[in-house]
Length: 116
Ligand code: SF4
Ligand code: SF4
Image (tube, rainbow, N blue to C red; front, side, top):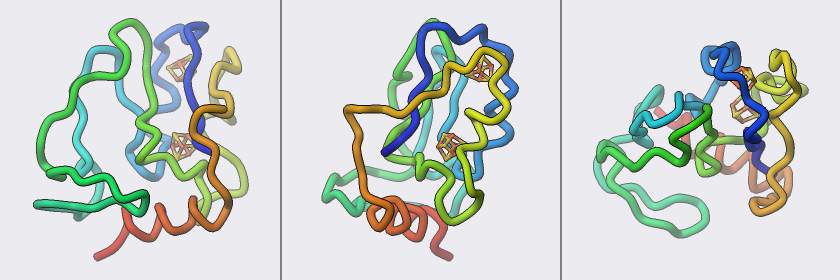
């Protein structure tokens, strides 16, 4: 499953540069699927959702850092553990129960996000 950031976040920013998928954003910051990868134009996610990769999307949290679940692979394919959770000083990067995925699904998402 994806990882999420809880309201305990102190906005220290330590997690953001550690994410291999560019899935972490500052509070109130717009985000794009194409941030940090080569996605462009119309994309269809492995879960069937359709987006424009370069279109700005609304922030998912206006108060604290947030994770875009559709870009989070729980670090599968890169590291043995979620890097955001590993560096967070207040342990507020936790499993997102609303976005449960199998390891296969997470690896498919990683391949999709990282394709050349
Ligand atoms: Fe990024 Fe990994 Fe944290 Fe997901 S678990 S947000 S991929 S650092
Ligand atoms: Fe928030 Fe933890 Fe990320 Fe710092 S490392 S911004 S406390 S989620």
